[in-house]
Length: 244
Image 1 (cartoon, helix red, strand yellow):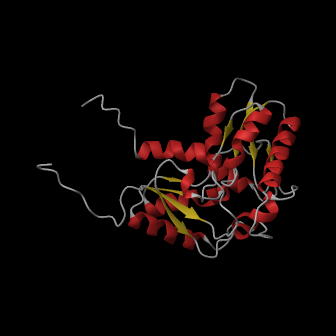
Image 2 (tube, helix red, strand yellow; image 1 turned 180 degrees about the vertical axis):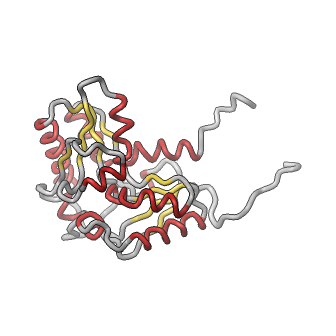
Image 3 (cartoon, rainbow, N blue to C red; image 1 turned 90 degrees about the vertical axis):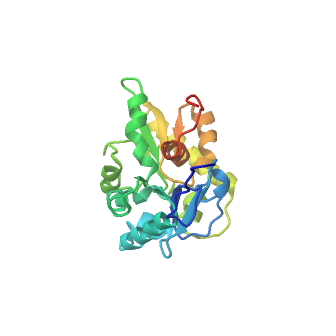
């Protein structure tokens, strides 16, 4: 250890990824972004008080930008070296957050759409499952780099997922019914657009159902888990000891 100097300047070490959380009380089941055991690495959380799913998704996060900027800065001061969020609709704040905190920022799983599209054969395209199709505006898509004509379905017509996660009609979740809502949305998407060869899940609460979708639909499924594990790999590359 001779000559080793430990560098300071942070309050917390070993958790370089900060997650901005909406203010909600529904259960965060394994696979949900808000369940810390979902991640194969430590993360830092910061709940943005008053930023309910209904305000962010259904009301365009109106008036909430200063709160998210402040919360992101708090995470960076705490020790985060990169920032993400737990709602794909926060793509609206991508540019402002990145400019404010001056560290890498990935606000939305929708940012994967151009990458996934690049992997597909000619004549095939990406589809999106979102929690609310009516609320996903051109502004959200443009902010995430998504084509405006992308095939997309929502879960508003389901029995459980939208009712609990967005409308906050219950603090309990029937996971089986929620899974059926996601499966129904996926089947409807492929039935309407047979040229879809991969799906991106906008909602950060959908990763628990990704394998069910893959098994049922037979196409690759990408979500916030796939994106953030990639994102984190750049912050903390795996060491292979090849150069030692």
